[in-house]
Image (cartoon, rainbow, N blue to C red; front, side, top):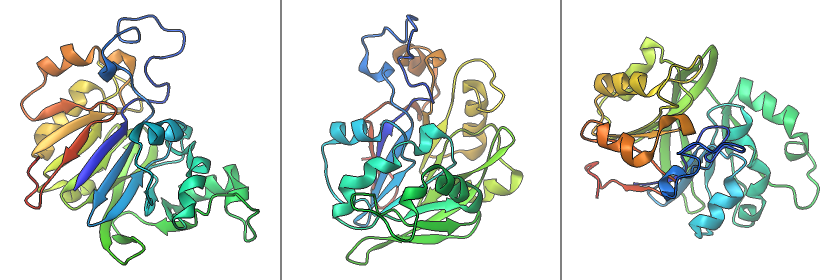
Length: 265
């Protein structure tokens, strides 16, 4: 399994427009964060998790123009779905199924009706909606029939119910404030946890760094990588030095490779 962190930032990105703090003016490229998204590649299947407004820039940076076999949507907020129209070039390889729960899918259709009508006009991305439900596994397949199972589970983004996803022994969680007790069943035996940690101070809809560290203790994944960070998280180099063993701040372009046993290569 290969996990590429396409974007590790929160909704404003880092640097934040108009800000001259030490993080926003840092020369360390790890402090420059596009909006949050990831690419998971396993068994020949390429799965995009969220598709925000920086997707085009992320793909130009990645410079790996190949088929995307599915897009998993955690929730409807613009920083997680604002790049769906930019999937157009990738539709030359195949139609790209988008997986979302009913609440989110309805809002995608309202926001981008031209992508989800029966008769699409030329050039519109072919991104058919597939409806998913928490706790019900589904399969993402590539064009030659390779399959990967995905398990969606409930995450609470403040009071908004959103989705987290488990693929093998990897879990992706973003925008979480807390988890329902039932969701911890899906977090057992993880080798890799990718999870949000917005900033140092408390926030009313996203967990802080201290709350994220408490979750890492309970979940006890082999390695944990924090994403969806704002400039208020602090400088990457300084914060990383303070984190426990096997807990890391992710950064844009980070590649995590797990072998069949789940060990990081």
